[in-house]
Length: 175
Image (cartoon, rainbow, N blue to C red; front, side, top):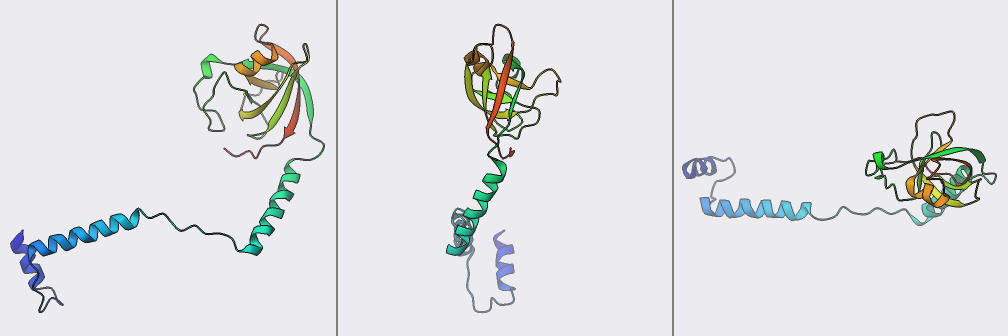
């Protein structure tokens, strides 16, 4: 190996007058690798908007917010069911891990992240929760609730309940 290195250095086009030993070459090579490693650990620069652009983006976001959250949010009544053990710990449509004791819901159409108020019409108990999953289309059901939501609404014993769903804030639909 050392002989090949010496041949390479001595016959390299611009190595005339250079006296480079194998040991020095190893140190230089190690220094290059260390430098590359350290440089790759440096965080990327953060780019910020110029002062005029920041205000324009804020106005655009607030217009989008008003578009997604119209003043006349909808209210729907129908039958709710709940899902629990079989899906606990699985990944939901939104990418979150399903916690059957949490307050969440699956809806066939509403965007992910939509905030709802669900009221059990038989006992008037209500809760606020977030849509984080999809449910299969069932013409007899309007929403699937987590077990935790079903407990709070007092519908675990029956399994089904007539509920009123009020959209409090539309979600972004992003996963």
